[in-house]
Length: 285
Image 1 (tube, rainbow, N blue to C red):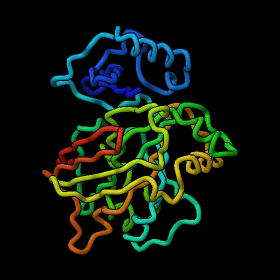
Image 2 (image 1 turned 120 degrees about the vertical axis):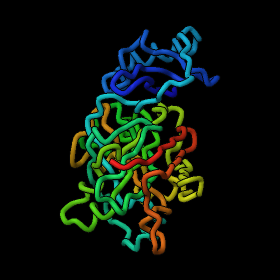
Image 3 (image 1 turned 60 degrees about the horizontal axis):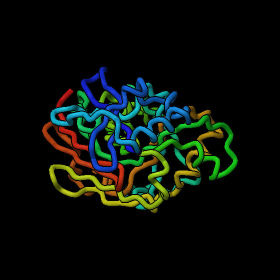
Image 4 (image 1 turned 120 degrees about the horizontal axis):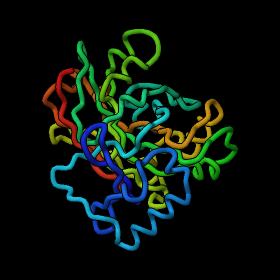
């Protein structure tokens, strides 16, 4: 299923995109799309049955904002330097274990919402990423099979980053990762049954129509299952948590000088096979 949330900021309603591309209203069945829903097999079964019947009310998509596909996100765990080609382009050694950092849930915005260039920023960068949405509690998982069983679905994430804040201002990466609007998510939460192999997905990103990233999750150093299993050794993942799994080569930081960092007025578009497409215009904070 392709689950999403539509409406104005703070007043989104749950919806479903059916197999014919018709937007359907889910608010007659569930109050929202969140961790509680993803952990409720009965509720998900009712949604599947209603979608198959074609009885869900249609929604007019014209002029309707698409919000983040997941409400009340618990935490966002991110994996740094998780693509072989991205590590090479930045001159970094291949990590022996996954590099973990966190993003605050309040960085999440809709897939087509405005992204704000922080005040004082000179190195705002783009990163298309596969987001993994957790649907079962994951604690000390022992196998890849257990890890994938904890995954409710997948989404497109844009891990916007301010490299000077991240790397040149001391401390951990959090300062360059947690600026407002720095995690557009969506348009859809695609349930795991529609993604048979998360290591066979193409990821692409354009800036002002110019291709910048064109990669594949097959290049991940630590595959999705290993990432979820690994993270569960250090923290408990709960339904409604999100794991951003890293970006392929092609970021501004990895390009020759002068590096083409983002500025107000730029337009970024990104997509992942089967998971939909985002478009953001940048403005000054």
